[in-house]
Image (tube, rainbow, N blue to C red; front, side, top):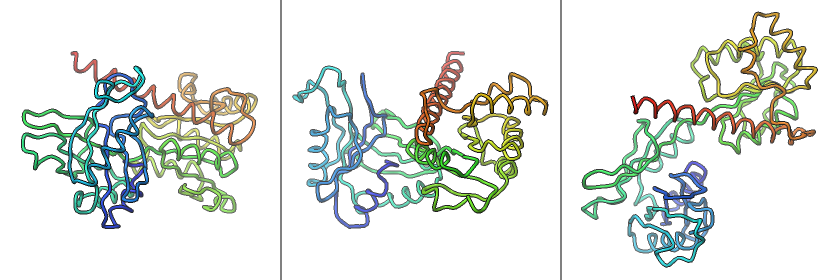
Length: 334
């Protein structure tokens, strides 16, 4: 829903009714995660998706029917329901409902929290023994997994929207501009920081917060304010030692980060390591630093380098997710 929140608000403010489809459960292969949404606006425009192409048409018709009739229902789509699809498409459960300010009056509050980057959770009754209860929404700031919860007399789908993870890029240059684009695409809240006010121009980094401050001082202040956590990604895009070494000294002393990378050639990195070792960092600590940042794909331009770093960010984020899942599995077993 986060990716189409502006489209949803446009329909909500129009006073007209669209159709909303939400992927609430999958069986077998699904290219999109549970919680993905598709909006059918009153003029027939489509925003978002709940399927990778297998069920687009039938979900479209179901959302259109919900918009016309006001019906809210949980539907299952698979090859057995008369839809001609590939055997690889699997089975999906989708909740369809009409969408407007009348049908979902709480949505403005949801959109406000998402825009402010604050966590918000929406509980939706997708099945109940009393049909009048189906489609009711409850909005809360309680954190929860995004999942379908089965209760004795009802099924409730929980859509949880956490605050976006941060990507902080130190060094205002073309590499930072390219990485800002990739970071936004990956769902990061991007900040670009540079001590040089002339280069720290918001117009050069659309969609990013731009800060003119010494990198190490800004990172120290953010850490002290509790704004840095295990999901935060940091990239040093400046290879100037007077900015980079104090910054990396602060970053490597933080308890945990989602990703820490630094641009530069192997020769630049050797000099960097020597400086950091002279500052007291051992090999184990320095192994946390991805440098040169990004997978080796032969990147030459700023955008190619940004793609390489983005791929490494995804890999680091996926590894962290797997570690968390393994931890929770171990806890549940014990």
